[in-house]
Amino acid sequence: MSLLDMIQNNDVQMIPDHYRSMTFEEMEARVKEIKEKLGSKVFIPGHHYQKDEVIQFADVTGDSLQLAQVSAKNSLAEFIVFCGVHFMAETADILTGDEQKVILPDMRAGCSMADMANIKQTERGWQEMQLTFGDTIIPLTYVNSTAAIKGFVGMNGGATVTSSNAKKMLKWALSQKERILFLPDQHLGRNTAYDLGIPLEEMAVWDPILERFEYEGDLRQVRVILWKGHCSVHENFTVRNIEDIRTQDPEVNIIVHPECSREVVALADYAGSTKFIIETIGNAGPGTKWAVGTEMNLVNRLTKRHSDKTVFSLNPQMCPCLTMNRIDLPHLLWTMETIEQGKMMNQIKVDSEIARWAGVALERMLERV
Image (cartoon, rainbow, N blue to C red; front, side, top):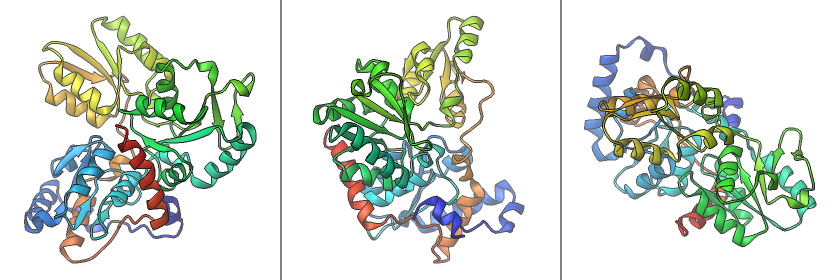
């Protein structure tokens, strides 16, 4: 069942009011107490974009796939309290053992990008693409997608990709079929294909709402079909942001995530995955200056961590990822207390058939990277 389905069916439990009346210090002390009491029975992975109030209790921090993989290797943990968003917890459920229970502290913590490609839209779009191009397309999906989309891709011969391995996976896909359908983030797909030498003129956008291609010219020239989706955080970094920085201080290095638009990536000094951004700034020399085009919680953490450098957001008006920030200290405490009481809530369970095919899509990627 999708996040939207659960919300519509009123299956999302709301946090009890008394947590809102507790002080920050009371909640911190209580989480610490329960975490020590439960020990290895509970494992808390925390995504890079989480708030510090949550990250302080994480057993490991990282990107979504990395956290799911680490969770799967932790055979001692009965409960995986996944501090991320819905699609990440789904991936953890796919990769972890049947005896492990993956819990999302707030079921409303979704991802706008993942929600831009639902399975019904994808199946309808795929039908139209088959009519237009025949059996010449292989689907790839960014791991920032629902389990159902991963399952669709796996069933149709494709694979998942991450922002770190997207180039390698696109090369593989083009060795399998003449064309690629890239879901759900058009910007990562466009930036990666462009870096591989595919001209923009050979990329078309599929609009799942209007159910048509956005393309001027002969569709037979198209090699990459980009799903019309995007990250609501990274799309807010603009060419104007870069121009302003260049004018104010030409010595600033501009580093962005490839979920940013093609125009922004083209003007930046560096572009790469979250891991790439963290490592590049970490390895930079003292006194260097960095304007960072990614989520604000991570930028603030990098600013504190590297006090010998100047690190700030490329967009001064930027705010953190709102859906990711639904996972906060009150929800973490609520989750820990329900586990302590032997109750089960907000468990993420992926349908077995979807999980099987999604696992195929993930495995095709992992075999090649």
